[in-house]
Length: 392
Picture 1 (cartoon, rainbow, N blue to C red):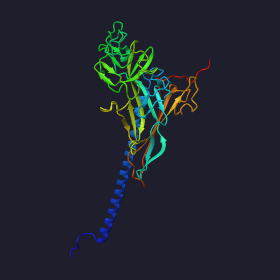
Picture 2: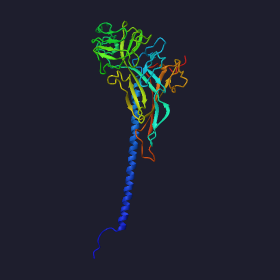
Picture 3: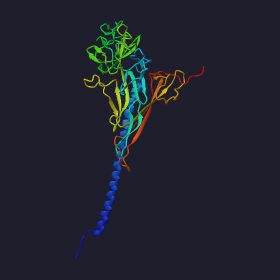
Picture 4: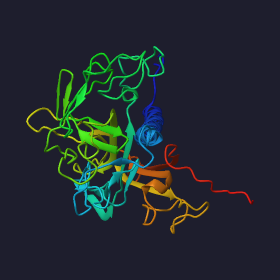
């Protein structure tokens, strides 16, 4: 009788066991590889958010003070010497003692709470630590005059290279058709000198315009644009468009009777928004949002990074005496302390902390990847002090 080919039951069981071991090992390797991939993706996501946040902040800080007078920009101050200018992003005001806006305005612990989350329960954890806020001011150089430069060159010149309404000497064309209302309520440009609305970023409601002449400076908020005329109406969200205050207003520096130039400036504020507590965001706010409320929001806050848990700034602050630092040291001051002011800031130290947007579940228990990023930015447009004087 011929023997049939095949496997015995024992052989089949052994082969099945070996197959199960191989499959289990392969599956475990695949699961581990998936966990590694998830971890790398979460860590990369955290780093990407941190780098995006730092990129924007460094870019604005490097421009701080560009085109702004060394002494800052005057703001409306009442007879009691108090200013009540609203500060974007904080729901409050700048210091009431401010008579001018500096190029960099610190905001130590003026922000919302620094929050994190329990990765196992999803509960929001709040230790009561306040985040910092910072506001940066710089001029916009994209608005150019339609006329030739005062020097006679035919290339384009910045808007503030020509007074708004004064007849200029040849070969510069006449700007006689321009005017500024004495109260600073309206500005009308001569189209031969500047064609509204300008570009590539046109002048629009929500912009901040700086007036500058031999009497000083003033800052106003654009509430209307029509043809060649800009309006600066009362009731603006900043509180800048004032007429009866003793200083810091367009009317007070006699814009209607003294040759006056105009520049557009950007006021940029960074802060942490923890309204959505499961996903705090770093927000970049340009000028003031939501005005007028009856139409679409102007300059809405722009989230630029997710899952940001903390934002802090410290400052290198030097006094007028070379090598004389603030009491906290050359790089540890949370803000200048009188008699030092923001005009004594020479560098800003930025630190931001973030976590992954989702918990990592590859370990024994869920956890978030957390990381931080820091840098120092020298404020090139602020005062320069020789910190290493040589002996006579």
